[in-house]
Image (cartoon, rainbow, N blue to C red; front, side):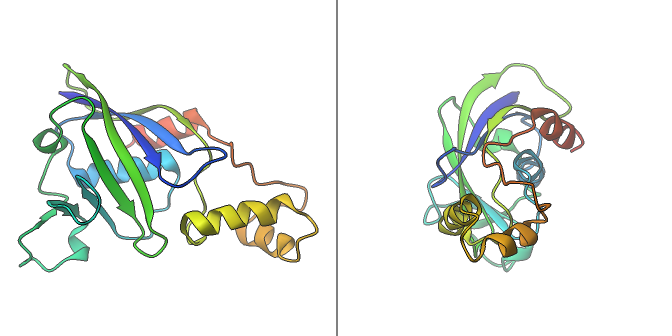
Length: 187
C-alpha cells in the first residue's frame, strides 16, 4: 500500500504553504517526519509529534527524544508504520514541528494506491517554507511585512539574518518541485 498525502502548513496564507507526497505504507512515522522536513525545506532542528486530532488526542506518535519511555499514550515514531494508522481516503492527522514556534501541519490522505513503492516522492506543492526560528505563523507574517518594506528599520537586518544578498528579495511564493523531489527521494 502507498499513500498520497496533502500536507498543509496551518495559519499561513498569501500564499498558503503545502506539499503533496506519495509515501510507501511500510515507512515509519520517523521516516515520514524526515520526508516532510525535506519536502517543506525545514532543517530538522526541533522535536516533532504526530496525532489524530490536535495535541489533546491520542495516540501521539513522537520523536523518541521527547518523552519518557514509561508514558503509555506516546508511541515511538520508529516503532509504527503509516499503514498501521492510515486506513481511508480523507483521513486526517496532525504533524507538529518545533514546539516553540509551533509549526502545525494538517495531513490529509488523498489517495490509497494499491502498489508498493520503495521510495517516497514529492509530486506538488506551493509556497516557500518559513525560515526556522522566525516565531511561528505570526512571526513569519511579521517577517514578510518587514521584508516587503525597504524603509522598515529592521529590513536590512532581517535580510542579513536570512542570508539574502543586498539586491535579493524573499519570495514567499518560491517552491522548487525538482529540489523537493530530489531531497525526498533520498529518504
